[in-house]
Image (cartoon, rainbow, N blue to C red):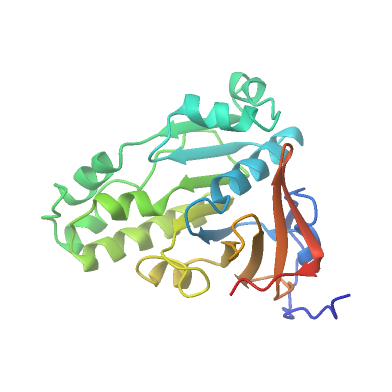
Length: 256
């Protein structure tokens, strides 16, 4: 049995979003993710990042919440199909307006922000251009998912200074939504870095890492950073079954 040790945080007000993913909320002393935070969900390909975020959305929708899902790669139909695979009856929440999926071409974002894919705008010009995303008026989501930051990076040839400024705009915009924002980041190596530029984890309030171990059939998860929260600091067993993700707080995993 693990000797539980939390990173202690002094918090005046408990304002928590319960993910209701079995075992995950137990990793937090207060039982969930602090609200109004931006969380980087990081991992290599196939670690379950999108499933993790979609399951949090679905569980929140079942509790009469609202979610806004921004996709840079998958179509709305593809996302729905992936969620139905786990018997998550998602269409009812799309029909009643509680779950909005917005498919965005990342090249359009770059053209709007920088004037071209190559990035001709100066940093000053960029700061006066459009908001990073467009959430419908009078729609106040509990959760915003961006799937993924890496999609913008992969097709971008913009100057790093401009792109870093755009990332800062994204995080500032998300802070104004008062939601829990989950930003998926594809990282090249387990347990070494959490994002492409390094600025992403600096700007984010939290970093959650998903892993595949040397045994490809074993998965794991850790909370590497979480402002405004006390949480456990080990790497724990994670599985993906027919009902989604499950975390095992009593099983510490070595991912090396």
